[in-house]
Amino acid sequence: MTPFRIAIPQSELDDLRDRLSRTRWPRSLPGADWSRGVPVDYLRDLAEHWATGYDWRKHEARLNEFPQVVTRIDGLDVHVLHVRSPEPDALPLLLTHGWPNSMVEFTELIGPLTDPRAHGGDPAHAFHVVVPSVPGYGFSQAPPAGFTIDRVARMWAELMRRLGYHRYGTQGGDLGAYIAPAVATVAPEQVVGVHIDGGFGFPTAADVPGMTEAERAEWEQMRQWMSGGVDHHALLRAAPMTFSYAWNDSPVGLLAWMMQKFKEFTMTVPTPEQAIDRDQLLTNVSLYWFTGTSGSSSWPMYERLTVADDGGFAWPKGQRRVPSGVYGGGSALMRRLAEQHNTIVHWPEGNPGSHFVAMDEPLAHAADIRAFFGGLR
Image 1 (cartoon, rainbow, N blue to C red):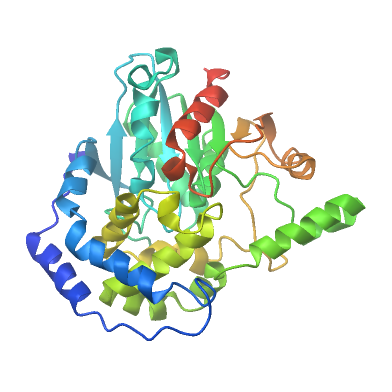
Image 2: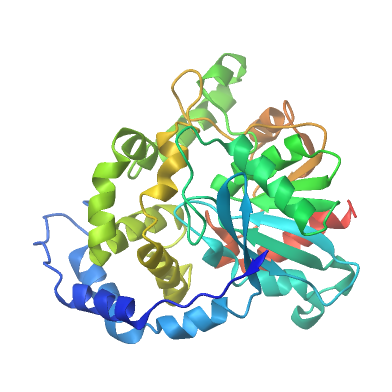
């Protein structure tokens, strides 16, 4: 375990501002608002703030408030935030971020989880928090060809063993929702529970024959929702290297791509920063920019780890040995499907938030995590 501190050279900050100032802006296409992608006026304003209003050093210092290490696991250097609770009997909790996100996803969640006493919560429900950066993301080394979710899960189990944690919970959303249950599969004697933001029980075409008429209508609505926006799964399966040239060379190109996806992921509001703090969004984009990981982070897509046997979208695999819970439950259909492959003990309704709830609803997210693990300690 080698102590780590983020220290981006000033020359890289100067280069970023220079590139932003020399952006070759396209003409606006006909159409209203976001109908043809990220609007030019919107992105100009955000890029100007990134160049002249956003303070990377301030947010770098905030990230450095969290103790960090780098450790080599299975041949790869892995960057880890490891924040112990002031409560000695806290339960260790392994948080795994999603795509196109990073450890930045959890910066507002860590405090309420590690020190609930300071956030109006019960200190008996505190956590020691471990946030590794998935290989290929942030300061973690990029993985080789053929990398899998199960391999990450085995790495995470080894990480927790090295940290001295032999009984812990796992949690994640988006990509993290695939990895969290996989850790329970490889280390069922150590994992006390699996909590994900969403993804348990989503139907596929294979489930349609067993659906009622009402459930088929619900399935059609889900398909319409899933087919909206840019299909990054298909795009990154096809040519991730081709697109990464633009994302790695142009900060505005990277910013546009990120805002396109966060617009789709913050479906409850007109623009992403109405759900997530603007500077937190830019800190996440900046981390991708400074580490050059826009291409290497797409390995789950180009390794086809989100593709089902029938060629459709594959949701996270279930497991029965460890109890599971979800932040955003869903309909009776979704619960019925979730219970086919999971031991569901927590299925709330009405929790607020969009796709990355740790960013837009950190207090509600922390409360739900505490509620789930409160019955498993």
